[in-house]
Image (cartoon, rainbow, N blue to C red):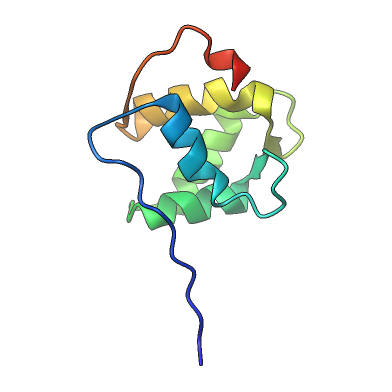
Length: 100
């Protein structure tokens, strides 16, 4: 018997940064608030995006400023910006995105 893990879908329409962060946290295997390329690829694949592996690689290149292989909490605003520009997600602007 195979077990499948179901993930909450990303809210449709305009999304807040908090909703995006909560959705992304489902794919954080370690639960430490950091996301790696494989986790990001799994998240993008759940959206039925074409070339999820390539988009995850590009997102990591853009968001992982210290090149440690994961997007840390302080790098999350860079990931949000990537999602808005390249994944065409509509996200509300918050004054203090860096606190996430």
